[in-house]
Image (cartoon, rainbow, N blue to C red):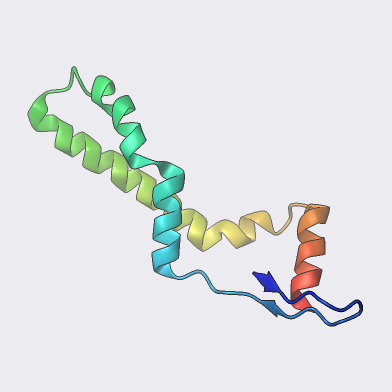
Length: 97
């Protein structure tokens, strides 16, 4: 988001960009940190048979994907009854003007 600032009383021009699938994927990559989580999965799977490890990893990845897709589909409905923090309502009003 960018805002034009300058003279007092000037109307602020707000440019809002949409999140694309690529920017969402990059954001998830950095938030979930798959490279850093390797250190957790290696010891957890150390006692699992090497032939079964791939099946376990694929199963866990599918469960995580299902959770993400479920929240993608139902997240708005789920969060609608929750009270909106004041900081979000202020920024939403600022962005819509």
